[in-house]
Image 1 (cartoon, rainbow, N blue to C red):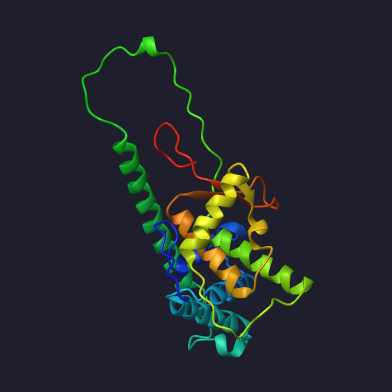
Image 2 (image 1 turned 30 degrees about the vertical axis):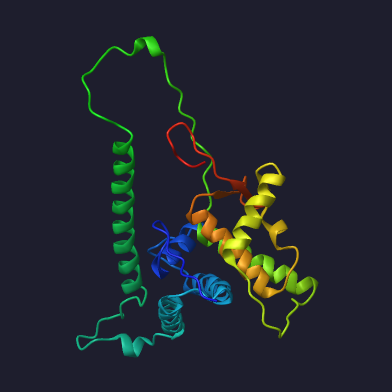
Length: 254
């Protein structure tokens, strides 16, 4: 089973790298390659289990990270660093090219987000002659809690798999079976309605073998893409909650 994940706000290996840098609060101009490479490869392991398409792009960047990490481990001898004039000529930082790519990508990403926000803002306005609106009173705008993204969900899925392996090996069978993502999506929505509109993320993975877990996770991704559900977390280490997506007065999903 293969499933292509492509969301407008989260797409590609550089986006995953930026997400990790922001989450780990890393200085983009002084990247600790050992820690960042380790975190990046851990995410790839979870994505490999899901058999996501276009994984090769992520593997290419993983190889680049490992190359940079290995170059930084090589010692620099003072004799080799002297140029013809007898002054030190240190080699350029092997991270420079990666940092330049990340900064350039970040600029385009921020510009794209700014244009999208402008388009969304303009979509809820229309032009008309000014008039006195004092009779309507003040309008209070309440911002909804920040929603989690697909990389946060993959990280939670990876940790859940590791905990299951510690408790007991995942069951496996040789018999052929068909598992439908669409049927699982209906099952998840029915469960959410029965539980009042929300449930714990890990409660959806209590039973089943590895294929059942993967189908459940892919179903969650598709429901997120359709904005039928949202994933929220009250704090950094709080449990993730799956909630039915509802529209506010402006038509936004919360």
